[in-house]
Amino acid sequence: MKKQFLIFFIVFVIIMLVSTVSSCSKENGGNTPAWEWDDPETDTSNPDSAIISQGWMLQKSFGDLPSYIRAYKSPATLQGKSTIAYIVVADMSKGAVFSVLGEAKGYKTLSEFYNVDKAPIVMNGGYFWDGSSLSMLCREGKVFSLNNQIEYRSNATMLYYPTRGAFGLMDDGSYKVNWIYTNKNVTYAYPSPAKNKSGTSPLQMPSASFPEGATVWKAKTAIGAGPVLIKDGKYVNSYTEELFDSDSGIGPESNNPRTAVGITKSGILIFFVCEGRNMTQGVLGITLNEETKILQSLGCAEALNLDGGGSSCLLINGKETIKPSDGKQRSVVTAVSLK
Image 1 (cartoon, rainbow, N blue to C red):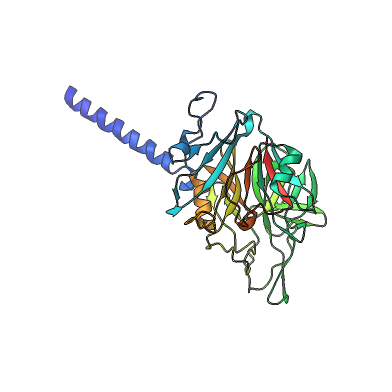
Image 2: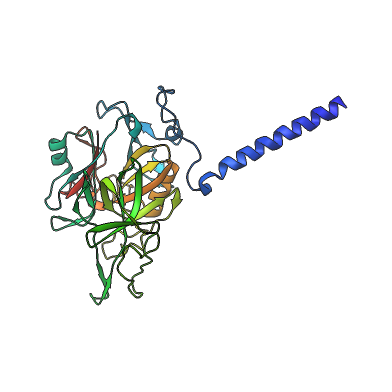
């Protein structure tokens, strides 16, 4: 009897262990890793073991950073491609400060932004044209620029009103990615984008009642761009709905330099940038799909694509990380920073 009881007990323990592992693997719908980032307070020797285990290498050659901000270089291959990418991770609960730089109009290189702001981390931000921002720029609760409110298609015969992405610090202290639209000076956030698609009939202008689930968007600090890549831990990549199709050559499946910002479930803010266009031989860049998967692998529960291509650039203590694909830093209108 004792032997039978022992066998029964062992089988029971195995079943419980398998059940627990299975439950953990299904957390967040299998989209973002179930692991939480290690707490620097309890693991000072290896605070970011989850990313180090993926081959990302801690960078110290750029000089000292605050203890709550760390920089990493990618392994030589990501998503099966030769890659040069950098991430900066910041624990927002330990005193890190996220800021947006720039005005509605006016160009600066990232080095010029750095010389004014002296933030140890500066990265390019939203879209622009002819010296004017085309993306949301919100600082201290004041909106300086809106996301582009209209898009024309079919030789300007069709007018669309896209809900586009914004990333920022909300009034409640959380960091969120939202699809937003401003109507009559009120900016609304939506749980999903308006289902626009080029070539189909335009939808009505977004408002308090369309699309469904609108709430008044309340941000302290925010940058707009798009598309939204990850929302509530789920892969979304709403490139089509946000009407980013164009003849620019920076489509969702093209290989290009990319820039993104994201936040993990445990409150780690991540800046991401990657090189492309053969500035380093054989490094072509990545697609939006690959960018999204990389950010998911880093634990991002929310992530927004920022301006890419020749605009992609990240400075650490004023020093360039990747080689900008214009051959030099492009003058941009907005930027984001960490202190």
